[in-house]
Amino acid sequence: MGIIAWIVIGLLAGIIAKALLPGKDPGGCIVTIAIGIVGALLGGWLGKVLFGVESIDGFFDLSTWIAAIVGSLILLLVYRLVTGGRRRG
Image 1 (cartoon, rainbow, N blue to C red):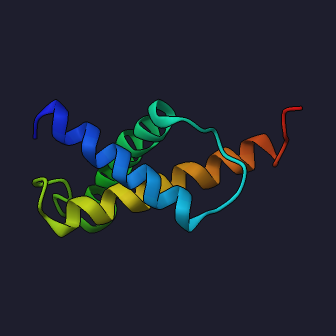
Image 2 (image 1 turned 120 degrees about the vertical axis):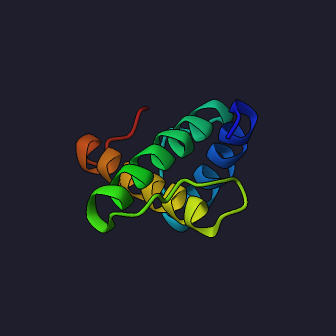
């Protein structure tokens, strides 16, 4: 996959993860893309380690999207655990 595909997957996976876990999270388009891309890499790695499958095959493969969304959800949950729900203000 090309860099544009990673950015699109990152943006959409980050948006979906933030929608599934509403609350105070780091915001902005760039942060959402970063959460999605890192989440996709995390989800792909976990899929390979836990299930022995290549979960990041292509842009239109369902496994790619599931891995990206699950990885993004895990990343957001870890962020919330680390920050402890602190708010800036």
